[in-house]
Length: 151
Image 1 (cartoon, helix red, strand yellow):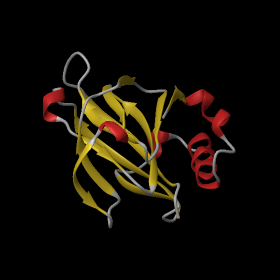
Image 2 (cartoon, rainbow, N blue to C red):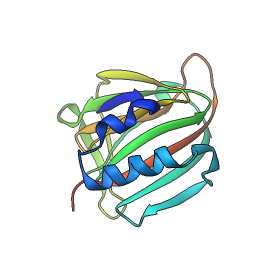
Image 3 (tube, rainbow, N blue to C red):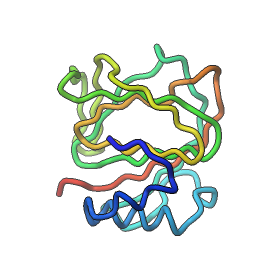
Image 4 (cartoon, rainbow, N blue to C red):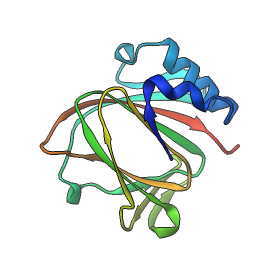
């Protein structure tokens, strides 16, 4: 897991070629210009999904994880809290290899606040809960970079 400021994202260049591709794209393009849905960067190696939603009370959220992709979470507007835990603490309840989606449950080890300008990168070992409201329900516009880390 990496929690940083968007201005510091270039410090993580060199960790993987697809991550480098995504970082360069993020630094060279405005997140505000992303269309809702999938935005192409480099085919299935790196792309960015853009979502709009309302945050929820934590008890209405669930953990997810991925085996093949790292996620780069960036709030464009609004604010949310995310919970992150090591997969070793999770109990897997469902898995879909086609969509690289794992549903799981367990304790939250760390909470991160995501506001515009903050970045949270989670890797396959990081289960993560998204859409958690901070102090009150918030309308969120969010970009999630998907970066292939295992081929």
